[in-house]
Length: 107
Image (cartoon, rainbow, N blue to C red; front, side):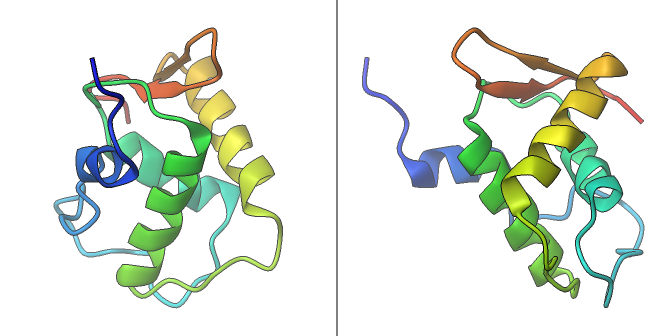
């Protein structure tokens, strides 16, 4: 079976379709771990495990497209911390290869 491409993985995240029903509340704000966690939780019930690089690009792209500003810090530790926070809440799981999946309906 062929591995999904970067574009296929990004399509799972529906970058162009906001995962939230209300207006984006972080417009004009720099990306933080808390904002990243909120965005990640909005992508509940992803159909597959995705590498952290895809989650990073998805969060960054979504936040920017919604009018947010970039963080001045390193994005990877921020996204990793957000994913682990979701995992502690039972909202995300990590496989043995370090890929992540967001579970359904986590707020």
